[in-house]
Image (cartoon, rainbow, N blue to C red; front, side, top):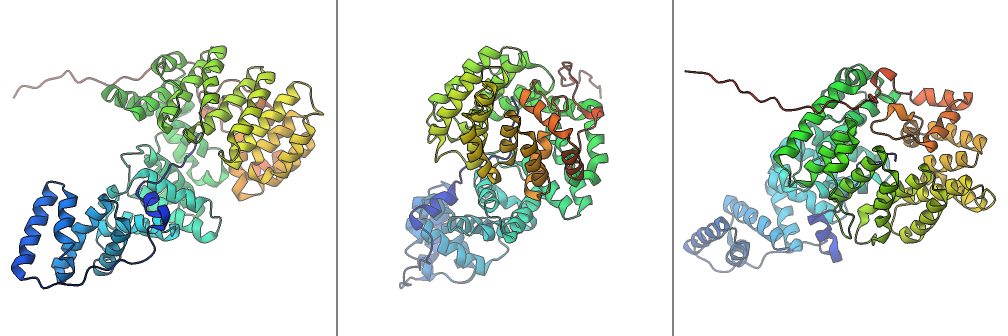
Length: 521
């Protein structure tokens, strides 16, 4: 199974609620001031503070809403700040947006106000503005980033990613760089910090800000991610630093990564992210049996979270690497029972399942499964994902010797090649239409948006971490032997130097050192 993990984008939290039913869009004014004495206002403040200390937002708003319009100056800022927090908590989003706008004018550098400005902008579908405010927040008052969720920030990034305008890409890049340099690690998506650092490094390198990119390499501890930087010529200025961090066979990075992830799991055995990272570390160490044992209780079930799905797929991968192919296939078959609306994170796993059946010599079953997923995923899975499933259909037909039947599917896939160049090229290779595959590969490698995707596909299995043999990947090696493809490839990437290929032998499991020394004073 080839690991196609990436920065998968989750659902926004508060921002999605703000967008629901057009809840934001106009300002809501305060009630007209009523005759209220200074003593009454002072008493209201005391009562509101007492309610806030009990985290009683309904009580805070019940006290302040009728009299908020009577406050002026610094008292008004304080009152509106209290209301901002409680209006958000009580899902009174329209009023919250109005209060946030008022406070943004009165206190433009207030981190809390800026953070809520991000939520308001995202809720109004102003994603470039949300990203700009996020970048400013990260640089000015990074402590206030904790108001936001990682899933919400990923949604902003996803929306900007689907907007191919230069302005949107600039806004996303600036936001990612600022968040990475602020060393932000949201509690709900604990591995987002590494993903941000990886994307920020690429953005900085493209802007020729090499020193800043180099400084962020310390944030990337995953040997797979570091290895991926060694194959793209855009990262050539960083190659010496990356090679030092990896070490021969990647052992320097691997030992540090595995030690940290296994220690974290030892401390937090009820944590899904810790379990996922520990299982991944064992796979990178070449310890497939141990990884399979660790994840043995991971069941594929309706509505499972993204993290639980990742753990389940690590279990399937571990079974495959341990030589338990039939068991891995049977385990993943449960994926077909899932409702993709209720379990949207099953999409990448379904791609892996169909591909895996082909890889282990079950093309007839792979064909049935691919066609079932085409029906099941229509209108739910992304176009990019669906093209991988189409690839599985074509490759299964090719393996079964049913090339004539593949004619319709391959022509349809070629017409949609722009949605997934790698899948289309691989499907052509499965049908032995190498000249067409080469033409598309040369064209794709000349495209900045596509080249990075293709460079990875050309890497041999030995250069990859925890990768079983792959007949599909071997097809790319043959394609690279063509002079036109090799020339186009060399302009954009390289095969990872063998010095840094992971060891094929299981590596020792690193252990925390226990300090048994004592001192007498």
